[in-house]
Image 1 (cartoon, one colour):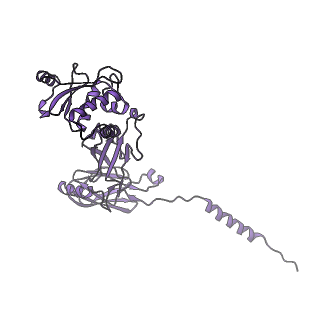
Image 2 (cartoon, helix red, strand yellow):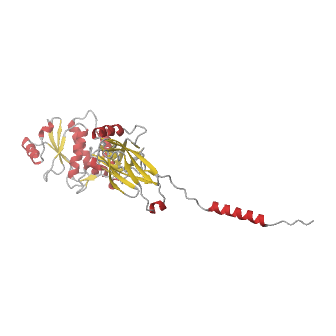
Image 3 (tube, one colour):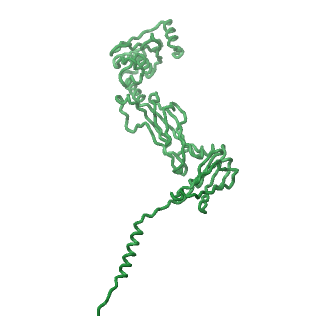
Length: 372
C-alpha cells in the first residue's frame, strides 16, 4: 500500500523557525531606569540646586509630556525655575523637606536637608578630614610638586618621582556633582594653579632653596562642604643650589679656619669657578650654570658667607659692582668679586674706614645694626 506524506506541516514548522530567528536578530533597546539626579541632598541656606529626572529615552524627551513638581514645605525650599524635566530649588531656612517629581503617574522623591550657617561650619569641619570613610573625600591629603624651568634642564636632571602636577579627585559624590576648585593662599601660593577638574600644577619657581612653598587646594561641593589638601612646592634650581653650597662647605671649609680665612676662601672660590656673564643677574642661575654678572656674584658671596655662619649683605648702586659687606672676626670688610673680567675673576678684600662704611651703608640702604 502506498503512503502519501503531506509537506504542509514541514513548511509551517520552517516558517515558524525563521520568524523566531528573525525576532532574535532584532536589537532590543535596553532602557535605563528613570531616577532623580539625587535621592538625598544637603544644602545651606541660600544655596540653589538643579534637580531633574534622568534615564529618559529620546522619544520621551521629544514628547510634550512634562514633569510636575511638588514641595512638602515651601517655607524651607522654594522653586526658582522649572524646565521640562528639571527644576531649580533654593534653600530658604533650616529644615527637611521632600521634593517630588511626578512623571507618567510615577513619583520620584528627593529628601532635602537645609542647614544654617552655624551647622554648615560644623559639617564642613567634619567632612574636611580626608581620612574619614563613607563620606566625600579627596584621593590625597597632600601633594609635593617640583618646578624645573626649561632653561635649567641642561644643568639639572630631575630625579625620578619629581613631578610638577598632581590630579586631585573626589570620591563619595554623584558623578554629576559640580565641584569648584580653588587655591587658598600660603607661602608662595601664587606658584600653584588648579584647573576646573582638580589638576594642580606648579607654574612658577617658588624662588627659595630647599624649603617648600605651600598652599591649600580646596574642593567645594554643591552642599557647601570644603575638602582640603596641603600643597608643597619645591624649586629644583633651589635644591641644586643648596647642594652646591653644601659641597663647597664640605670641600673648602674646615672648623679650624678663622672667619677671615673662610671669607677669603669664598672670594677665591667665586673667582676661580665662575665666569663673568654680562646681564645675568640671577645668583641661583649663576650657581648652576657657572656664570653671572657682578650683581649675581655679590649675592652668591652673601649666601656662601651666611652658610658658614658669617653675617653679610650685598651692596647696591653703580659704585659697588660685585661688592659684598661682610663681618669677619668682629671687623667689617668689603669683598669684591670682579667686574667685566674673564675667569679667574679678580677678587679683592678691603677694610673700609668708619667714614667709608657709613657712606656705603647710606648709599646701599644698609642698616648696620644688622651686624650687632
